[in-house]
Amino acid sequence: MKLSKLLKEAMVLIEETPICHPALSDAHDPDIRSIHCRAQEVTPGGLFAAIPGFAADGHDFIDHALARGAVAILAQKEVVRDTTVVTVSSTRKALGGISSAFFGRPSEHLCVIGITGTNGKTTTTYLVESILAAAGHKVGLIGTINYHYDGKTFPNPVTTPESLDIQRILSEMLGCGVTHVVMEISSHAIDLLRICNCYLDVGVFTNLSQDHLDYHGDMDSYWQCKKKLFTVFLNQGPKKSRARAVVNIDDEKGRELVNTIEMQCIGTGSRESAVIRPEEISHALDGIGGRIHTPSGTLVFNSPLVGRYNLENILSAVGVGIALEMDLESIRQGIKRLPYVSGRLEPVAGGRWDRFVYVDYAHTPDALKNVILAIRAVTSCRIICIFGCGGDRDRTKRPQMGEIAGRLCDFSVITSDNPRTEDPLEIIDGIVKGIRRTASRAYLPADFQNGFAEKGYVVEADRGRAIDIGIRASHPGDVVLIAGKGHENYQVLGRKIIDFDDKQVAEKAIGKFQPLK
Image (cartoon, rainbow, N blue to C red; front, side, top):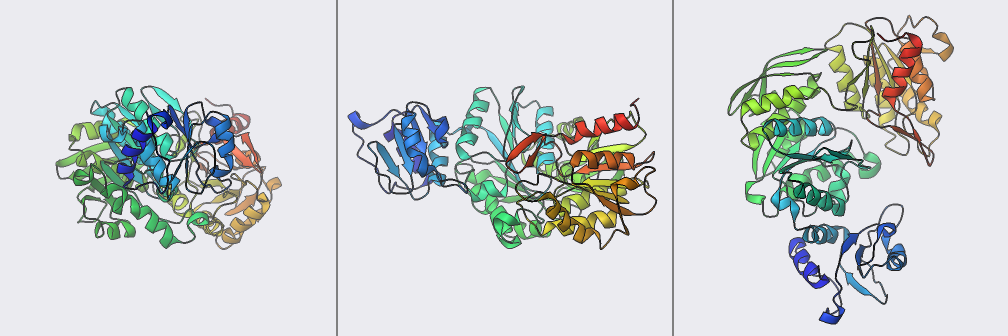
């Protein structure tokens, strides 16, 4: 595509005129063969977008991009080079429009559902995917665990990719016959304009609780960012008039959101004002069942998912189905067919041992509390929790998570969880400050020859040994919850990334303790 044509289409999309770009005559109008925002990936004939980042600035890599064959530069700073340079006020914003135009505006030809919230995004995304598939649609998914479509799965280093990557992925999905796309949308993606010109048909809000304060600074800034999905991004573009919002009104911020947005909104939750609300629900360790009130009638359902928080996720997914005018049988089948989501209360050695061992992604105070309460509600057995907190992240949640584990669990093993460049013991010390308020005794690792007799906790910075301690401390019927990493198969230590999978480590620990059936 000629640069002049690309700019003409893109600037209409982002409703902006470039601050400066050269006159593009036939002789000096480069043919753009590809678009890049990472200089090391530039190929000949490419347009390089210089994005200011947190660790590095793309403007510092322009010469590298040119050396690799870039024929044009998109910048937001003054750049003097012997090449075509287009200057805009924000390269992040412009990249969304340019990428959308380059790939043929794929989101306009797809039904796109975007899901945001502190917790529940991943499970809700997979529930919606399952419901759409049950209705016979060809579905693509972009999320924390991976992105996948048409039987192909690809790693995804962040919850929501850069705008360039989103538009490329949507274009690939469209080319494979995908009709519906479900995607998780993080607060970082909203703030960093990664979803610019990705037009949504339905936006979903799950909940809001403390997370990412290392990035946003305070809860109000975090909330204002999340809210923009509905007040800004869902409220623009060619789908604006038909866009729908699905909002959990059991959450305080959800109720505020419903009163803020102008589009049609489907409220979910236990309140009488909720359009989608539960009736006669039963909870057990093997799943949830019952009836859900909807505008289309009563939905009788069964799900292998566990816990009240997963009921909230199910209600959100049902809300999407209703927003898309799907039949109740497809919704019921979709809910039934999803056994669990990778790393979300995922069973380890299920049915092959006399304990219940789970790995879960819970890494915020609210998520940890919810998953423990979900287990506590369906069993009277002891709960052993193995968890830590991430390094170089929000420090204020560490004592909160310690307090929650000490109050709700019978025994906790405090360990490392991606310490990054922080001292693991300093992170653990922050957790211990909270758990001391609620746990009655501090044990030593050597105390665990015959389990524990009194409610308490132990510190073991090595996550592998911590999992081993938790397994050895368990008795028949106990629940062992390994929280924080879920689906992740790595551990970040300093600047290194090492292989580490909670589920595999737990299976090995169980095998050492007692051969599996």
